[in-house]
Length: 514
DNA sequence: TCTGGGGTCCTCACCCTC
DNA sequence: TCTGGAGGGTGAGGACCC
Picture (cartoon, rainbow, N blue to C red):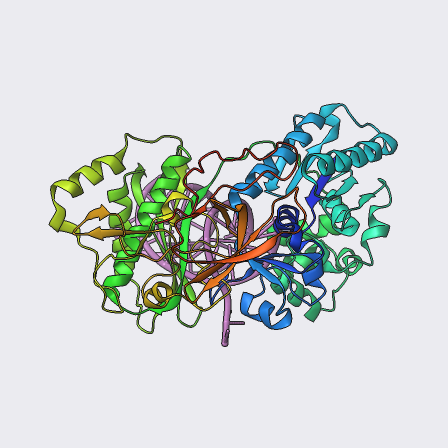
């Protein structure tokens, strides 16, 4: 615990939704919900306007739609969020070399290590300047908490929301914390909160009064001791700039439960490949392979297998995942499958995917994907978008605000999400000749005549586009055929500063175009 | 129409070795 | 040779976070 408030916690306000409002002028001041749009999607972020209707993070999107039927429901655009986040993190690194990002929209900064704050006054001035700099650079607001420890700085930024700054003077912690709910403390979620409530402990003050022994008895050694220290306002965790990843995993929730064992095996193989791609992308190999299965009743089980040594060989991970699957009863249906690797080590081998592809090309008939549950030809809808970009929600953002198109309906029983499609016929990928293009709500597009815009909704063979950008006034809406050749997916426009370069040919969009 | 995705950390059970 | 405890590795699951 430091004697000066030199730990800063920044939390961007309703980040994803705020970025969407900044880039889509017609949504400013309106309820915006970003998340999975499929039947099993959940809300990632809701704008403050949407929160007034009771919509919040982690709520099923279907429930959000009932509470706020007139909100704008958009898929997440992680490429843009990452770019904005990079800008914000760069501003934080100007304050100190010790910056610990927690996510795209949150970070701790050790101001003392940057030599910019030694007392409350300079810390506060630094925080205010940071908020102004972020607003100037991105057009977005963030909340700042300042305190002598990470826990208190985080609590302070939460209390300061939205668009505020709160400094907790060292020495006032216990008094400040005492009346707060136990749920304020990091690590106290619904289960622990309920556990404590049943014992009559509802505030941080109650926690401190209960004593360490009692808390350890109730919630376990590590958690109990940690809770007691936090209740006293004690937290000496340092700000850590770099953290090593401990595991890599991918998972998909399916719009409709899978029952066909052959299909389930096939999905596990695909997930294993995606997982290894990500593993290799991060420069790691790993020793323990984990299979995750969530069944029709939402019960979740994991099975794992530890190898003799670390691997990043897709064939090895595929085989291990397949072995693990054999030990799992999937009767009744499966709503989610996941494959992960833990026990990471720092190395990768040669491009084993290229080798595997070469082998597959040489023996085309050897590894046919299974027939789809709806009876269509094997492998007609293999999602490529997910492989290219492991974005959250890729597997769940099926709906697009309107009625599902024919392809969506056809795929519903087989493939969650209908991103860019490619054919795999007899093992060789071919272009999808007749695939209907998919326009997820919120995605960026460019029209040859009307310029840049975003998809407001699609369905019944039509896509509705609003033509506007971050710097423009609210734009007009136009409707096109789904296969309009003048409409293309495009990259997001920057929020502030750099003027969009007109008429530069758009690169292949993150969701492809078929 | 309930409940995503990618993580971390902790606890407990079980097995094996010393 | 048998037994019991300590401790590490492994596997499974729960809770939590953003």
